[in-house]
Image (cartoon, rainbow, N blue to C red; front, side, top):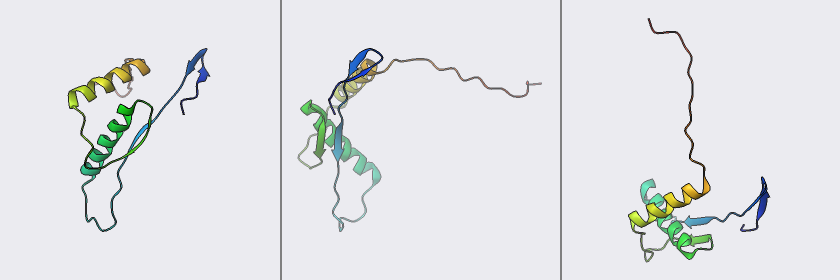
Length: 96
């Protein structure tokens, strides 16, 4: 990770920020939404380090400010993707 790769004449590198949640076997039922939320908090903690990597969720991690996190995510998406409209034609019988 992080090693530049040449693609279409440009150098690119990739990093991953991973949030991990570990659950004790005797913890009882936990909602999927709760696990995803905790993993999300851990992932944003990994992102805030700026180097990519793995962060394991713990209750002392602070959830990111939703507006700031959304702004960061949208900025990254715009920088790394080319927004494009897509058209999908459909065929079928003509309406009568």
